[in-house]
Length: 246
Image (cartoon, rainbow, N blue to C red; front, top):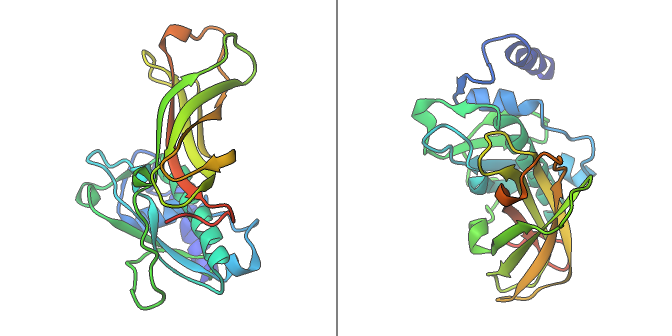
């Protein structure tokens, strides 16, 4: 069965009907995501875990990154389930960014199950395998605002500075985020990153706002500083023991 799935995946992704601009139904999204589902660095517990991820395509069929969340998980340990979830989330963000959801699947919840058998399928949560983790939307956990490129001269890497406010009842020690550095007058960004993680010195206590530094990426000398902006979207926050805060 695994060989058959691999053959179907190769057919759809390497010359079959699934194209970068072709609208996808949930089964097509599962096939497209498979090429970004990297299990090579997962722990033994993570490899034994199954997670179901949910997300909502917007009215244009694009994946709303802030809606990607864990709907259900089962596995031998919380850390293993969380690691499997993070890998699955990265796969969705990286691969489905090239695709749009079909019209009938827009502004509706889509579920993808990443199984311990290394297969991805379009499958709703069973509500029987495991108690799903109830996770608040990320923008109810942390607020990132007032971002700007901080350096006064261009070099290989730019530094961005933002303000981060902890909206939870738990101190935040780590923050993962996506970032786009762009010119507000240009269509193509100067630099993007789908997933980055920073450790916050001293953490962010509940209700506290602190300044954080983020990698703004490479910006060429032809870029105009007057119209240069950096957009940072939080993905997840973690406590002092590096467990994700829900």
